[in-house]
Length: 105
Image 1 (cartoon, one colour):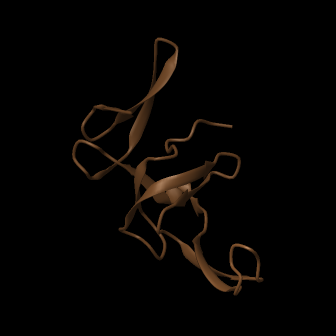
Image 2: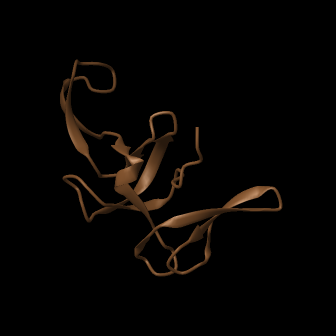
């Protein structure tokens, strides 16, 4: 399994799909499936049975996973989407922005 360019908490820009052009914060990443759940992106409606959390049941809107190939990291310096490169320094892998050539935390 290869290293992903997106981590939980990153701000990403959507490149393709219904939500193309929107940005959001990554809530979780599934490396085995190469998918991420992004806040407010790829919303789906799920029918739920009544439970303690939802006593009425009914329709609930939630985020569905989106493939990471459709996401670009937003450069913290410029605020624009950028590709990244991975570099090993002192035994750690760091992410470098291709646009600003700065390290991404």
